[in-house]
Length: 139
Image (cartoon, rainbow, N blue to C red; front, side, top):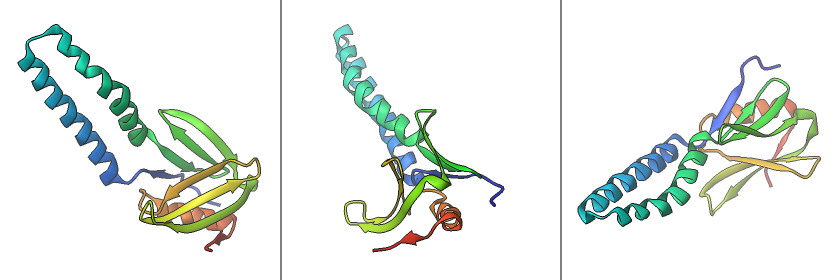
């Protein structure tokens, strides 16, 4: 059995890209608001706060943990789902043109699915962990 937990995170360049984009948006927006000299201009912060902040937090906090006895998916600092390896029904590796990369999809007996892309951080290590528990189909 494995001794160390393998944590798959969104691709590092994607995480950095979305964080830099969010920071730039707020810097540009702040410059625009300051140049307008109006308190009502502060309302311009609302759309980015509603859209960009959750998106940025999602990318920065999303991870799948391959622990010794189970797989745990976390988003927004919360454990969203956890599954035992024994509940894995099927694992499929398939190329998706929309993502321009291979994706690993884990199907569980309760009809839930977890997936990660092969360009995500630690994806190769996660595949090795999965192969210890089941075979990975490549249609």
